[in-house]
Image 1 (cartoon, rainbow, N blue to C red):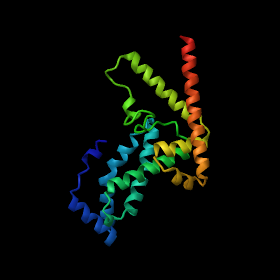
Image 2 (image 1 turned 120 degrees about the vertical axis):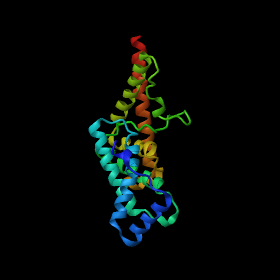
Image 3 (image 1 turned 90 degrees about the vertical axis):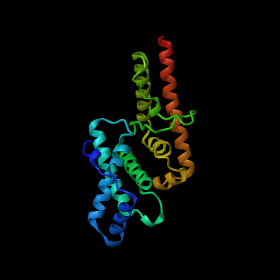
Image 4 (image 1 turned 60 degrees about the vertical axis):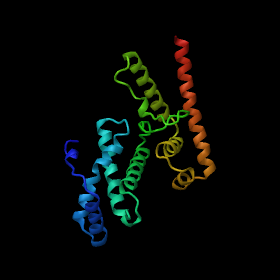
Length: 210
């Protein structure tokens, strides 16, 4: 992180020249500068997941591959901000890794909370000023949500992850998974029903123990 803080920001004109040197003249030096310049974006995306140190390094490695792919495939003449283009490529690469490695129980901090417009899981993390009892309850509930997601069948995990974490359109997800659109919706409903059922059972067991 200390090294990342040393990365010098590029001004728009300098970045434009770098893109032209790389895309039009094949300059690998310019390519390297662009990758280094946007490396902090990989860390920003990877840190959105709650993973242990080893897992985080794996996410950063995958995200860096996504960044390199973004640099190589970016069309600088289309007028789309590279940071926006790269963000989706980095996150997509990380999401594919998580699905492939069966790490779907990792929580994404920007995931929206159902029935709470504008509220994300990150907003619900522990407030350092909360009472200890409240912190403990929040931590417990978060772990139960993660555990419930981890117990879903693999195909339901992939669908829920793609639709709610990666924000893929159902049609796009169906194509990437080689499934029919109706099957995607069926897996979505089944997954949500299972998670709700597991959490409802948990709350009922807690109520009975009081």
